[in-house]
Image (tube, one colour):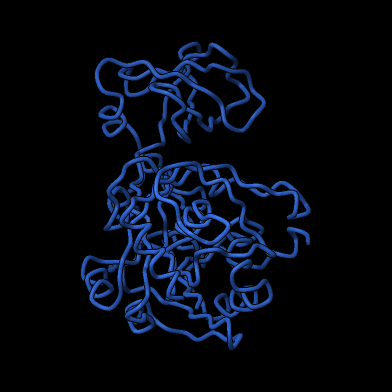
Length: 344
C-alpha cells in the first residue's frame, strides 16, 4: 500500500487558525465501524456515547514552551530552535532553521544572552544535537523566553498569541515534557471531564508528544515507514483499571492518537498493559492488530501522515477517507484547533 493512498483534498480555509471561544463547542463526526456509517454530532454530546463499563484513557502530558528564537553569535542571523527531546541534562535534540548553515561548534544566543546553545554535530539529520548553557534553571528560562510550539500550519506572528499558551494545553495537563498538544484532549472542559467521570471510569497516562508524532512519512510504501519513539509512563493504578476492563471485555476508549500509541506500546502479546515507563516505539498502520484500544476520539489529521495511517488502521482506509471527504463538504474545522471524530 502506498502513502499516496492516504491523500485527500482540503481547502486551506478549513485549517483552524484559532481555537473556538469555548473548548467544548466543536463539532464531532461519529464513525460506527460495525455499520460502516458516520453521523454529524457535537462534542457536547460525547458522554451520551459512553457506557458505564467504559474506561476512558487520557494523556496528561503538558506542552513546554519548546520554540526558541535566537541569533547566531558569529553573524547575528536569526535562528529558530524547536526542542524535540532531552537526551541528558542540558543536551537536547532540536529541529533548527536554517539548520544547514550551522556547523558543529556554532553558538546561538537566546533572550539577550540569558541562554546560549552550542551545536554538537554537523548538518545531515533532521534532528540536531545541541548543548545549552545558562546560569540558574534552564526550565525557568525556557518558561520565560520560550514560545508555544504551534504546528506550522497555524500562522502566527513571531510572538504568537497570548491565549495559545493556555489554549494549547488540555485542562488535564500535568506532566511537562511535550512539544505538541495531544489535540483530541483540547475539547474537554473541567465540566465535561466531570461528566465523563460520572458516566464512565477515567485512567490517566503520560506520553510526551515529540517529533515522532508529526515527522513526515518519507517512504512511498507504508510498510517501510516507522515512527520515531516517544517517552511514555503508565502508573500501576491506570494499568490495573485498564487490564481489569479488558479481562471483562469492556471497552477502552482512548482520547487521542498519542494515548493509543502509549497503550499499544505497553501491551504484552496477551493484550495486558504493563505499568512503568519506556519508549513508545510501535508504528500503527493498516493491518496492525490492536491489543488495547477499542475506540478513539481524535482530531482530523494531515494527508499522507502517520496519524492518518493510525486512524485508518483502526477504522479502515475507505471509511476514514469517505468520512474525511464528508467533513470537507460539511466544512468541519481541521487539525489541532479543529473539530473532532469519534470512532466507535
